[in-house]
Image (cartoon, rainbow, N blue to C red):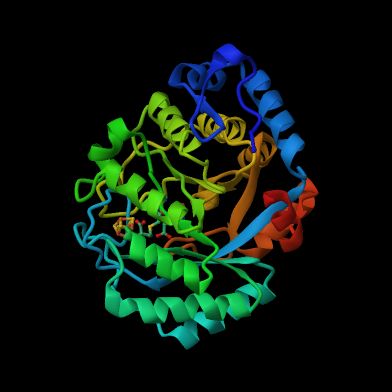
Length: 338
Ligand code: SAM
Ligand code: DTB
Ligand code: SF4
């Protein structure tokens, strides 16, 4: 299906897969337009595709924490930096399912399980598959983020019934090597293609506040929007500075620029769920409200993300009340995706 794209024919190059391909120049023009024009356009696109007051709620669990071989400069779990995080082994399936049950009872409809791996080992696949089918049996959508996947591993997860796979491109291709050296931007795209080919829905986004330029942020979104099919879910994380990590002292992103990026994501990927992801603890309610107006329609709920803090149920319930927001029902989301 065609997604609502640029406003004039001159604005885009038709892509092979039948959806618009955005150019960097067009995306920059939109990002740099007057703030009110940008937000008006983003919100109009948002209303055309979604209920503007419904927010999808996901819950995260770290199923294997720390000791990771990759050198991602933002991460608490990389073994390359003295972040003080204690590493642990893969969690037992029953414990994961007990946590998932609690999350479901707390209102989450998607359960996202993350492992601090470069890629999963064959010996871990049996437990991973059991986690996917167990969480599904609880009536929740499933998401995993385990690092790079081969085509065969992607097929195995698809057969287990995995709904989403999260694999972020994090930033622009140009800036990538400044943040991570143990894998390449092309490696990330390869896993995204493997996941897509296996028929799993794609969750892919990035992080703002790592010292990137506005053009890097725009380029990251153009890459995502121009994939053969745009990701169904686009997490926009604000860097949580981790003491001891390479980016511990990065300059925080300007909240207005953060909102501009969310708005651009909404315009470039009209049918995707845009997730206001990590970093909400350090964001004002007003900034979050602007993000929801600009088209963000998904959040992580609960006190913790993988290892870092998240606002928690009480704060989010109060925010939802103030803004008249409500949780997006599972059935409504499935209908919107069809
Ligand atoms: N190891 C897997 C991988 O890298 O794909 C999965 C887990 S990893 C922690 C998932 C994503 O969380 C990263 O790609 C990054 O975008 C985000 N993330 C990690 N640390 C973060 C931080 N300190 N602040 C914001 N986002 C972060
Ligand atoms: C994503 O884009 N953000 C989530 C999820 N995908 C896996 C992870 C955020 C991690 C924040 C830092 C932490 O908790 O360690
Ligand atoms: Fe490992 Fe993922 Fe953290 Fe990178 S982001 S260090 S791959 S856990």
